[in-house]
Length: 574
Image 1 (cartoon, rainbow, N blue to C red):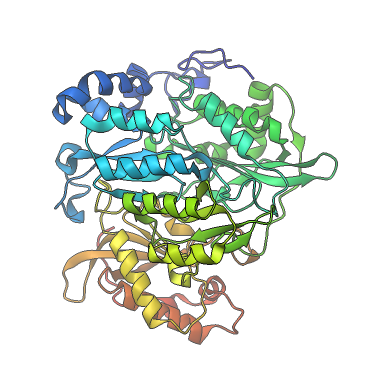
Image 2: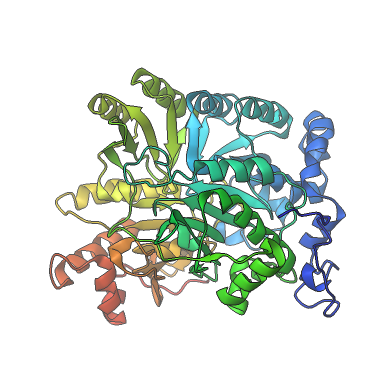
């Protein structure tokens, strides 16, 4: 489908009231909040020219406020948190009081695919201009910190010279397209989705007709169900049609944050070559019909919740594709998640090696050394996973690589705690955070490895610095939402509200579910290792048999039983 309408005037617009939900398709173009005003005033992508022409030469103080706190996000730039501001002031201080004169820079890595030239470029940028920082996110990006606006043009130049970018890595636009980290090499894969991801990113990332969406837009394309497809706005998962063969099954309307919702099947079957067409059609539908009045109701999931998938599919077919989609079967899901950690054989007889840092934290020096190790073992490419892990592909001597990765702090034979723990950025850099996360996660992993070394467990722990669920609080066995809590002495301190028994569809062969949030079930950050140990031992003692999973146990346990595991169930704010 060709989109001939300008970004502010979608096709077939009709007027149904002057305000409403701010849906362009109903002629409601008047901005209803400050964010919409900023986007209407100017395409946020145009801020790059000012960075290169003005801000990089005159420094942080020269950046206009609307550019600083809004438009720069379309180029992957967020101001980071000023050091020394505690979590109790996160929601109290104005943005200019919270922010430092440095930026977090997000490098988008669609499908998690990096060749060694790209990996070395990111490593070099980290060392030169980001104080050696580098974090792997749960959307296959790499985040750098301590970046100065003066250095951004040269960073862009070096990234783009190797085929990477920060374009639309943040903002109300199409974010990174998540893909299988073993696309093209897995023996279990019937279709490699890489061509679809490449076409989507080449044609539509940076497209000014798609740079003003109602809100962030997260998508995924993978044959294998090794991505968190249920929590994306739009995801395509491999499915075999009884007549047409292998293709993709679209899911719509997923998302977490403070109002979580799992995606639903559209009920269609899409051949590989049509995935980009359907992707952009859904994107345009979201642009035109998405809610723009309130920021907290602007994600696609709210439109799907109100319309239902049947109506969304009807509008998609009639107004955007101008043709019907083929009905299709649901994908066949494996009995357990695919995280690709360890040594696995590829379809060509070589191996890939999946290794776990702790909660995604690496560094420029580690990435540079990783490139050297991969090259020494005959590999020319690595992959990042949507679970904060790293894969080295095309290895002929995996045993040697496993040992050398371990020396680098990347564990291919990790404990279950290292393997299953994720963490967001936290208060160290994030202006929205209330508590520290990365170091807490590292301490937690180390303590549980020591205390529970004798137990074979499969329990996921997701550590979040605030309610926004960047590390997927609600879909972990143990989801930890950062907030201030009251300790045993009555003092407010960093801590977590606990969600128990969440998971996506691939865990335990069951449907996806959100964890139980029990009022008063909280722990201080200092007591977190004690709490998780106590909870784990309660599960081991209380399960009906060795096959009962943590999720099953928490589902049948009473609230009193679960609350008794709390180290200190204090009632802090939030």
